[in-house]
Amino acid sequence: MPVYARARRAKEKKINKKKVATYIILSVIFLAIIYVISSNKLWEIKNNPNQEGNNDDIVQNNAEEVIVEEKKDEISDVEIPDKMGNYEVLGQLVIEKIDVTKNILNISENASLKLSVAKLYGPNVNESGNFCISGHNWNNMLKRLSEMQVGDTFYVINRETKAKVNYKIYNMYTCVPEDLSCLDQNNDGKREVTLITCNPGGLTRLICKAREI
Figure (tube, rainbow, N blue to C red):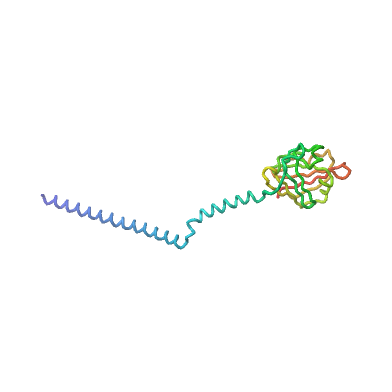
């Protein structure tokens, strides 16, 4: 074998040995990095045994808060009939200050108003809009409505969902029967309730307007 060929082979072997050594060194460094990262992770879990489940706990807690938020205004033990006479019952009006607890009937007319208060106009119970309720100025109806003041509260329960919404009075006034402005639905999509009854003598109407709180 010529001298130059042996020299070339020796050089190639030397280069190959360097490549192998470099590969081994890089492999060792890589494995060392993996070991350090794993060791740190195990140390964190050991010293914080609850850390691994924290995210699940947060999700679960948030879900529980949502459920509580949805259910906190439900009244499961209230008893509201489906009908009174020939009229469907939509819900219940409760004004604790003047001892009023009345089922809200679906149609406001002479026959229904002899039984209870009734829906006069507006959306369904506790939906966005101005839900208008009328009732006679009788002892067992809305006779004491005039005792209510701005800032007083009452609530309305939806019969089907048992959901309760609280309302605070923001305006009370008297008007003639021909003035129907109290039925206005231009309220920016908020939930409102308007209570309507006669003043003594029946010549004017007492209007009580309330907004969800």
